[in-house]
Image (tube, rainbow, N blue to C red; front, top):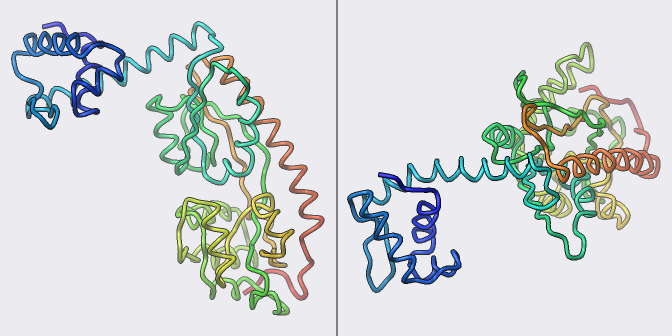
Length: 329
């Protein structure tokens, strides 16, 4: 029995579309030709793949078992085709980028904008997810590069990192928040209010403060236990919730620069120097990157530097000195 990748893709298309007619359109072939091809696959396999009826085509039990195996083979075939395109150094084709939600909002979007050119022949797909998920997908070759917090990367020689600039996190609240009128603002005051942040924020804060000692270590231990009341994977939702409540969030100044200018949000006068992250570009060390991937990475490095300069200017404008002591419980 020899069933080739082309035939597997035809079976997958019918299973996805739910009909021979729909699959034929997707595959750019006639419906009779597709029917004949599937009949030949069923002859080779020795069983029916689909139950055909007025409502379309549905996989049989045997067909579902077939597709489970075929899906793995198709994933490998797609990866090989993309790898061959990379080896050839083509300037066309797809680039799959995985990026954390924070870093996408901070500078990845600006880095990709130059590639949205008229009559372009490249396609860039940006996938937002949690860093550990993205790193797993990078190892499975489901994405070409990842831009995220590398803290979740276990020591590994197969992944190469390009470390980017350190970006500071700031505590942000709505205009008129009760904490803004408090003198001698301290960390203990913060944790009484709801936190809106990414689900992984407490774990990330724990990693940030491993080197701290003395009073700073005490402050860090307090904030480490500050669990999100609302955990979201959307910067827009995060800002909306904070603007309409007494919640606090932790963001970069670039993320809230427009809200600061409109006096909708305010930076709390309490900063912790250790509350920051060095993001990184990650890719498989043994994998050849396309000219497109190399150009995108160069653009990301450039925009990372531009963001650092912007954040310095925003800090000069929007950060106020604490009215009383800094940090503490």
